[in-house]
Amino acid sequence: MDKNNQVLLTDEQVQQFITDGFLILQTDFAPDFHESLMAQLNKVYEEEGNPGNNLLPRIRELQKVFDHPVITGALTSVLGPDYMLHAHRHGHFNANPAAGGWHKDSYWGYDRMRNHHPWWAMIMYFPQDTPPELGPTGIMPGTQNYETRIFAKDDASGEALASGGAGTFALIHYDIWHRSTPNILGHPRYMLKFEFMRTEAPAKPSWDAKGSAWSHPAGSAEGIPVHDRLWEESWNWLSGQLGSIAGSLPDEPSAVRGLAEKLEDAYEPDALNAAYALASAGEGGLQALLQALRHESTAVSRLAAYGLSVSGESAVPGLIAALDDARAATVIHAAFALGELRQLAAAAVSRLTALLVEASAEVRRTVVEALGMIGSGDPEAGAVQGLIQGLQDDDAQVRFMSGLALTRLGRSGEAAVPALERALDDENRYVRAHAAEALRYIGTPKAQDILIRELFRSRWCATTTKENAFYP
Image 1 (cartoon, rainbow, N blue to C red):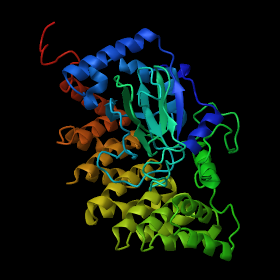
Image 2 (image 1 turned 135 degrees about the vertical axis):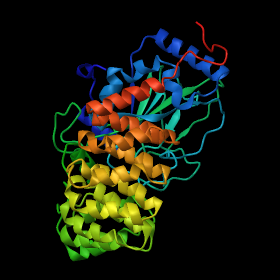
Image 3 (image 1 turned 90 degrees about the vertical axis):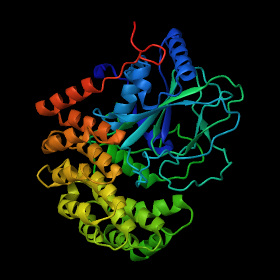
């Protein structure tokens, strides 16, 4: 991949991604490239079925798509230059004349708290001309930050279609609501879905930045609920600022009380705005969020966690105290917020690692992710030892999240190399895959030797099929 040839996003495109949750972009491959790709897809699907996670090695030409300067530039702009292509990928085939259901993608069975900051993204690539009648993916703009579906089940008003000529792709926030739309033509329609993860927190803009202050993009979709404070905070975060909105509004007791009540609003966009406004409202807002973290409603507690995750270093003591709460949801939400505060929450590492012994699997899953985000700023704080422990956990999701967390530590995770080598033999495919990725990002000579041996041992031949086992 030639990073010098990347087509980076503009300020306005990044602003549109923040507000809308997606961008529709276009590659410029020649028609015969897509004709060859379609011929291979049709053959594989007809003779072998969906190759699943082996999509990329089975159809090797696909790698050219993810080396294309428009795609690498878009991913670098949103996820930073060291983004990771995740082991899970899927080729979606749609010949259904009925629409699919609205949904957010899962994290391979992990019912995790979803990030508002773009730590994850997806590429949905369409290798054939995809007019609206062929059933492109439908995306509901601006819904990436909502846990609930705020629109009716059959409501498609405002839906955006990933429609266009061969080579069109949608770059989407991982958590946006989307669906398949009706294919009324009945011709084969493929959408090749690949997932990507940020491995480093942003230190500066990674797009073609010209401006500095947040402004609402002129081209964003109409009808999206307005979240100016959330959007501004995301823009600042992508620009390398942590806790940028904390204390930026007056601490007025009456206003704080009103915002705290608004956290309980049944309409999630309004409650979400209240959480970010409280994060901006000084000590009074901070205390209201910490109190709401223990609210009997887990939905209110979760919203409080989002506010606390952008409240800066002053939120850390109260969040550490919440790790002792008897309710698992409160502990999960507190650990999530501490992870988003990264190096500001270094004091929480010892308490978080203790939870890997005494807490439920649901809590441990959040803890290992938080350790990876905090520990990247302080390799001596004990996060690596916690993640080594996580690699040996009874719960597969704790193990594979520990591997992912170690990719964010890079070379400071060197002590985990022996545990990662053992994890290469784990029964779970994602534990194995994430262990290999962690070895790659740690990058020491020992880690590289282990990784190369594993890759040769597990080499998969793209031309070996039931009908063609050995020759030519």
